[in-house]
Length: 480
Image (cartoon, rainbow, N blue to C red; front, side, top):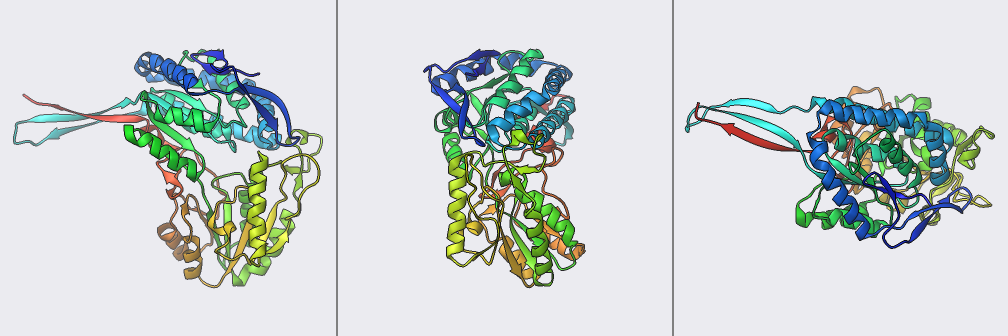
């Protein structure tokens, strides 16, 4: 069993219980972690609280140096960590290495920002006499990060990076299916001399560990990446104590392909944007609207590209280089996706490619493209968290923008066009936290990222993220 990490030490659960970690490509349990609960959360928060006083008062350059030392140590062990990630999550090894490098880039970005936190100063015209005012920024205190299974390292980084750089301490709860790479990364941070208690990990069920963190009176900031139902529950639990909350939730990102688009570029971008990580991405391209004029050309090219995918165990990528997609992370996710597909087909959707079960072990789901699905079907109204893509034919821009916004979600969106008028309309009219133009869906560490509507509140990434881990305090000095 791989232990949790509290106050810089490897610890088991207070209950003594364990949870298995299953390889989604083989369906075999290959390790286990502690099945933590409220008592374990209490211990982790107490450790973080005790460490906060010293860490928050450290010189920002010292905090940055501690982060960079951890980054260097992790980089030395990159292949080992990527191997763990592939084994527990299912993605091909190359994708695991890519995720790890994205994590390291983000950590370095926030280390660079640690010494760039600035307040403001102003002279105040006042009937009470001459005065000047200052706004200072202070770390909040103990934070909690609740991380999903699809990108466990990068999505941990979007929480610990700004939290630690700003002078906070933090407790991380990884997904129950993907805790191992997280634990190894945090272990390496401590080997690089990160002070005990600054970064802690408690493993266990979300309904117990996640809720205990959100409700704990000493946790002042909670960051979640997860599903919309989990986000709603988090807001309910955190609201009575007026905690700062960011929740990056589900998405059903629309893509519009206009008549003037570079169709090959659109197909390449959408193909990667939908099927990367077996489609398990909140910002994946999930609904595609293609104009009549280029629809047939687009579909022919898309189906051809999707047909090149070969499914397999991501750990075998070196021996079988044609493997481009691993399994879904759990059987329940495969079952939900299959239900969404069957419902669409029952309402008249046509399967252009895919849609058949893969024989043998593993939670695999063929990359699937649908045509003619009703816009009221689940593949359009719900988030499809896997390699299932509905394509819709549209006749004009008004229809395309209307259907793009006909969703309860509003995370990402994209358009393929060189018409500046349509680009401007997309920027102004699509209800989403981000819009890409002729660009692959990718979350940049340098730009704020988050959603509107049912896709959540708050922003991660960018300078805006580090600001959300700080409190502002106004000071007025008079008697001059």
